[in-house]
Amino acid sequence: MARDATEALGVLSSQPIDLVLCDLKMPGINGIELVRQIHDLEPDLPCIVITGYGSAENSVEALRAGAFWYLEKPFEQERLDVVRRLVEQAIEHGRLKVENRMLQTALRTRYKFDNIIGKSAALQHVLSIVEKVADTESTVLVTGESGTGKELIARALHYNSRRAEHMLVTVNCGAIPEELLESELFGHVKGAFTNATHNREGRFSVADGGTIFLDEIGDMSPNLQVKLLRVIQERTFEPVGSSTTQKVDVRIIAATNQDLPKLIEAKQFREDLYYRLNVLPIEVPPLRQRRDDIPLLVHHFLDVATQERNLRVDTISDDALQRLIEYDWPGNVRQLENVMERVAVLCSNGEIGIDDLPDTIRSPERPRGFAPVVPPTGISLNGAIEELETDLITQALEHTDWNKNKAAQLLGLNRTTLLEKIKKRGLKPPE
Image (cartoon, rainbow, N blue to C red; front, side, top):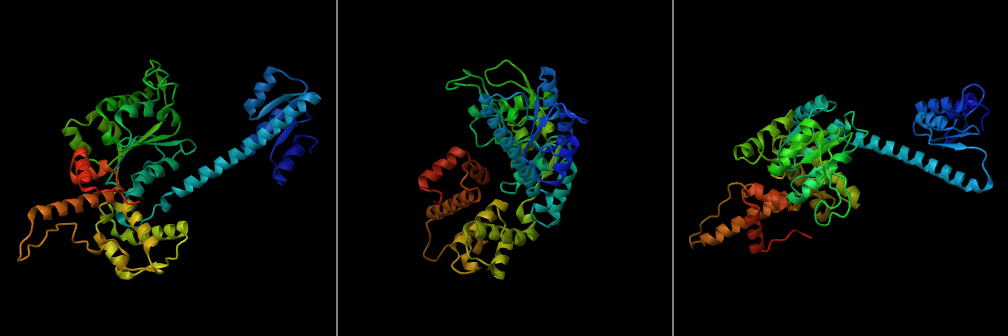
């Protein structure tokens, strides 16, 4: 309880408060001015203004000052339940605002630059660029091989920018069929196509005020490339089936593991879109170019795996660690993470030894330039080729977490050709 606004501000400074109910007319500072001061000091603290002199003007002014709600006196007995529910809603609203602010802070902490693991000169160069461009509004194109951590760079850009209070929306353009991607990006109206039974908001609308991350941008169809170009140029779009133009305030970060200039030469990617996306290019180096980071990543992923799965793996032997450093990691950081989780689960004692590593890493010379030796008794050439092809397909699938699109790219095959080969060999992902 406080007799006036001055005393109320003193109470707020001395103890935690969940909700403020204040009268409109008080000696000295009135209720609206008190709400305004409280909102400046503690923006998450809900305030309900109560008055016997109700008017539309006063209610609007109170809400603009930051009040959660505005109530008129007196409270008849039948209205007390309404007031109680309003109080409960206000306290819950304040709690959710606090939790959301804590979550945003945690996300920013998680994606600060010093939490991106690595000390190599190659990675530090990338982080210096990220730090310079994070708080700009310019479009960024992040390039690099699959598994290098392009999405991690995109998150660092967003959570260290002025848009961090708003949404970061991620869209994998390679994982969504072309016929659905337009609706996913721009939304649709009821009746736009079969099964469009209601209006749906697109990812650009959801990201309004924040950032949209378009992963695997090289897989986007030419038709959608034109529409994306319009969004970049005019910051407007039309939902599928609608003639109404919507404005959007969003920063675009795109990423790809493909060579976009080569796609431009092949007429598969628009040159004008490339230049619109490539305003601030950031190339993430492959893991084989930052071997100094491998020991740090190994111990980090090992700690994560043992904590999440409650395992008893204390360390890794020097020869096993050296073999991990020497391996070329075609699947990059993602592959290393998967390997460390696997060996941590399968390790039979407290130390990971060289025998615990997968065959492809224990014998790193085999995947690159491997050729069967012709014994004196002869060899089946077709059988040897078949075996080598199966081995390479299996490696590509393992490196990409069985993403057949990316595996086909690693092998230089069409996706349908790869699917036929997988089916022929009966290859299946591990359970």
